[in-house]
Amino acid sequence: MQAIKFYRSILAFLICIFLLLSCRKDELVPNNTPPFYDEIPTVLVENYVNRVFIDLIGREPLDIEMEVEVKYLQDNDLGMIYRDSLITKLMTDMSLDTTIGDSTTIYKVAYYHRMYDMSKARLLEGVSNEQIHDEFMNNMENAIFEDSMQYLMTGEHNVEIENTKWKLSQLKKIISSEKEYMNGEIEINEMLGRMLYNAVYDQINMNTFNFVNASFDDLFFRFPTAEEFDNAYNMIEKNESRLIFNIPGLNKLDYIDILTNSREFYEGMITWVYLAFIAREPTSLEKGEIMETFFYDYNLQNVQKKVMMTDEYAHFD
Image (cartoon, rainbow, N blue to C red; front, side):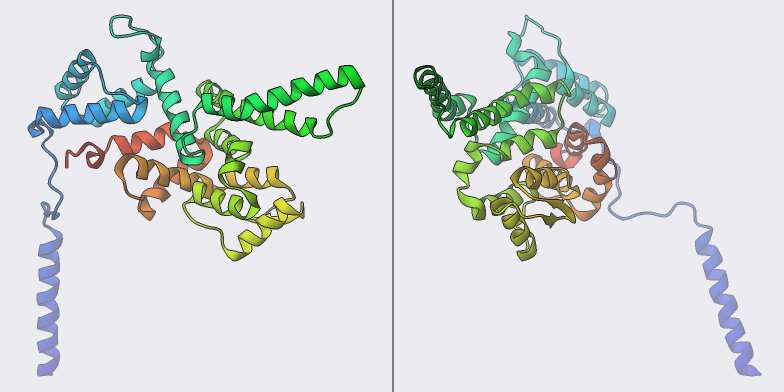
């Protein structure tokens, strides 16, 4: 009996403690101190504005731009919606202010040119449009011209000329992708797909063995598994019907289409944004949260905003 009374006393004591704790309204969460943005020095705000300009449009802000944007952010306590507003302006504004420059200062044009150049740096070793034309297209155009002259004289075509015309068309598609992406005519996966399917990428990554490994690494930041490689190799090299990510294909174009429409493609784009802007890979949680919308709306700009608005990116933390 004494033992029972003892345990009942202990139980009552614990219940009282629990009730007291549960009634506390002001619990402290460690390491959850809200930031005091009004204490952020001006030099850090200037660095943030400078970094946003360089990352998005490939140049530093002009003096007047720096003055205006720093004041705008400081007047609004560096609020997230105001960071969003600055980033959105650099991505979308088509107005031309002749007081600060010529047509190259149109933010939207500069932003999409920057995305185009960054994509070429990622997949095509940063080859310029001039190099594409001078080192590849010129030779193809000359071959097509010579074939037309041969046809006029002999009535015969070079057996390889149709393949040359096709290769030329793929190179033209790379160059046109910048404007088409800016105008919303294609999505980011189409632009990168074009950068995989051309003579420049083939020269960088000669033969099917290198092509398969490079395409996985460039898009997904990993190499294919043995099964993925085997299926991809036979799909491209032998035109065999094989599965990649459980999707059937039987040639190189099918292979690229499967890769650039896969869920892993968009996960790779998220990883690319994090690496490019804050020099680290996203956590599984960060990637998962972004993929909830990115895999369906394909909006790379929202992914970039999510990273560039953070205190980590801005060095405000």
